[in-house]
Amino acid sequence: MDILEGIYTRRSVRKYTGEPVDRPMVMEILKAGSWAPSGLNNQPWRFVVACDRGKRSELAKLTRYSRILEDAPVAIAVFLDRSAMYNETKDHQAIGACLQNMLLAAHALGLGAVWLGEILKNSTAVARLLDVPESMELMAVVAVGHPASRDQRSERRETGELLLGEF
Amino acid sequence: MDILEGIYTRRSVRKYTGEPVDRPMVMEILKAGSWAPSGLNNQPWRFVVACDRGKRSELAKLTRYSRILEDAPVAIAVFLDRSAMYNETKDHQAIGACLQNMLLAAHALGLGAVWLGEILKNSTAVARLLDVPESMELMAVVAVGHPASRDQRSERRETGELLLGEF
Image (cartoon, rainbow over all chains, first blue to last red; front, side):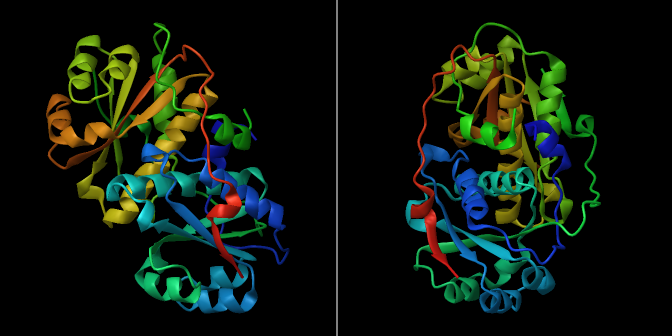
């Protein structure tokens, strides 16, 4: 799939078929995330993959969007390693770039994914559940699966409205 | 260009030929940025485009990497509209996703680009120079041009090293 087409056709996919996602595809998504740029190339992203139904159910209890994590065959928790940080704003931006690469990679692989941020309200409980080291701060959970449908719609403002000035 | 290939072959490009970048390509880069996901689809990104040599020279004085902004035919300043914010961490992540789309779009268009973050130390001066409204906070400047070469190298950690756990 062409990059620009991929960027414009990617949607948040929240319903999945029951089909599992092969591990090589999950690893490709993580690899794509890791090729995001980061300040000083500090690569502050770390991942935990949860395919196990029990673990996903426990994770699901920590968000309002529990059905998504119950249904998706894979949940990928993305953490910021605070011991690798150099600047809070720039590291958060780098994690955003990593997440976008992951979503685009899932789309390129014919999968559907959604970036879940609301679960950050329970970031400490998620970190405990996934048994990560002390320095890890939850940044998002990405749910991934085979899309049950491809009719998601979305909208964006006209580019001209976002352009404040030209010199 | 294929999405995954684009993600893996994109590099920070810091040297450019003298050739200008057509405005439709610049607008395509902004449009790609705008198709990033954001929490509540709040689309907090705003842009200022500087092609004018004088304006780029003034901008160049505000960063250690002045040569890049002197040479690149286009500088795109990316702002966060604080009046559209809903959560600082998540909005910074969304801007990171937007920036990554912009870099990938430039790469897809055969251009080269680099994300400049060091200039944030002078964010107030940049905002004043580019005459943006009070609510705008500088997030990055992206330099764009036709690459003088394509031999940039980069490295990432092995994916396995980034995977803290699997359930």
